[in-house]
Length: 195
Image 1 (cartoon, rainbow, N blue to C red):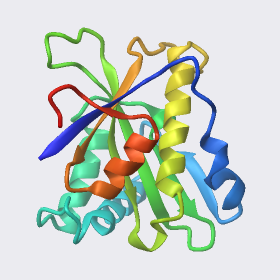
Image 2 (image 1 turned 60 degrees about the vertical axis):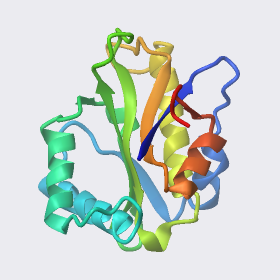
Image 3 (image 1 turned 135 degrees about the vertical axis):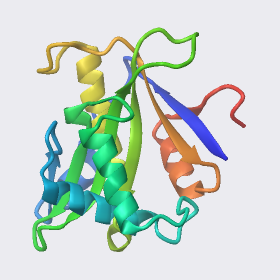
């Protein structure tokens, strides 16, 4: 079962992204926007990352690496889930190996629920290669995304349009207790009827 979680922006949010990866591992990693037109190599690396991150976890459903590359293609190029938000779609590159070791993909989703009228940002994927997990990289990416979206909401971003929605959503497998604990520690809350 998947749980839907929501993060609501408030005036008390601190810029916390610099408390983790930025200060501790800045020399080892580079964080960069994936952008509107990812290269074939980036799509391939992100697909490999997705496969590695989900293999043998509660989120793994028998997909092959080709399936993972196809999902990245559908998400980033075909915009299957909605328009990608560049400043909230990031990858982490290990400076020694030049490999993509973590990524977060965020899209502007058009609501299918009649109670919601404005498109809202949704974190579609947070993934970190197994050998890099537990270092705070995923947490750093989520915090960076929340800060970028907060800036966009307040009209401070360089994008021509700013967000109308004051919340960010994501979906998580209820058996993925590590991810659920992380999201809730960052202020995400379960949506009503999602116990």
